[in-house]
Every structure is written in structure tokens, then in C-alpha cells.
Image 1 (cartoon, one colour):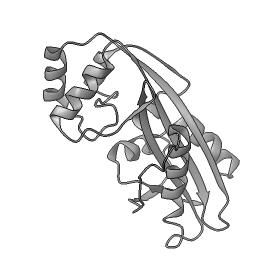
Image 2 (image 1 turned 45 degrees about the vertical axis):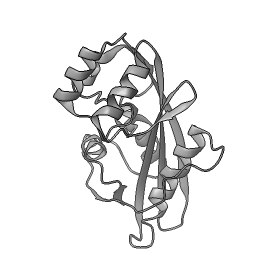
Image 3 (image 1 turned 180 degrees about the horizontal axis):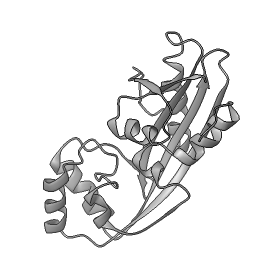
Image 4 (image 1 turned 135 degrees about the vertical axis):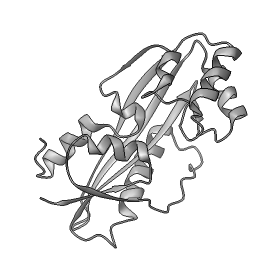
Length: 192
């Protein structure tokens, strides 16, 4: 079987990939993740997913390298990782009673020949109306400051949602496994 390399330092993505029960290594690529002027969110995540995978090609011959990148979009505005309590609170107050679209770019790059498969998977979260007390309690309990959208859907963050819609809930966490399995199968990796 071809060797797999996850181009990410994210523990969330490692946990998701481990669900496929395939051996893999991981490395955090060093790339500039700055959006280009007038770059649309979908274009951004596709470009960054591919760039993350390609950044590791030179040191990992004959690997299938998986890159992923995600943004949350509220009313045409990208919500980044909040990094602080105050910014997370500001984001969740803005999301209260609204819908946020998560766009997750996914790339599978074959380091032996440079061939790549790239896609963008969308997943929508419809937030409940939230008050400051609910948001404060949530942020103190889970501290999701390294998560786009300021929540962890795999944990208590689910309590903030009225509903969700999309084809692959794992895309919400940052690595769309359903589409990744398609890409791996296309590349000759048998899953399961």
C-alpha cells in the first residue's frame, strides 16, 4: 500500500484520519495561509489544501499526501480561528440565530508524479439564538480558541446548533472522510 502522509499538525484531523484504520504519518507544513486580494473562500481553501500537501512533496517521495484547510463563512465574511476568549465570544454572538457555511478544502497529492485531486466540501450549521451567559459558559467549558467558528462540533459545541446540513459531518471538524475515501479509492488505496 502507498504510504500516507497527513499535511497537518491538527490533532482533530489526526483523530479523524485514524478512523479509516490506515497507517499514516503526519507533518505540519509551513506555508503562508494569507488570503489573496478578492480570493473567494472556496478558492482559498482549495488553494491552501493543495499547497499544504505540495509543501511536503520534496521530503516524502512515493507518498499520497493529504492536505486540508477550512474556513467558516458568515454573511460573506470569513471567520478565522479566534485565539482569544473575547474574539470567540464576538464570533458566537455574531452567529447567534444565523447560519454559517463551513468550507473545507481537501487535496490528495501523489508525490511520485505530482498528480492531485482537490475538492471543497460545504457544511452548514444553523445556530440557536444564543445569549451571553450561554456563550460564556460554553467558552469556559470547552475553550475552542483554535477552532474556526469558535466551537468544537465533536464536543459540547453541538449544543449551540439548531440544526446542520451537509453530506459529511466530518468536514465540519476539518477532514471530510467521505470524500477522502473516494479520493483514496481513485488512487488505488482500498478502504476498507
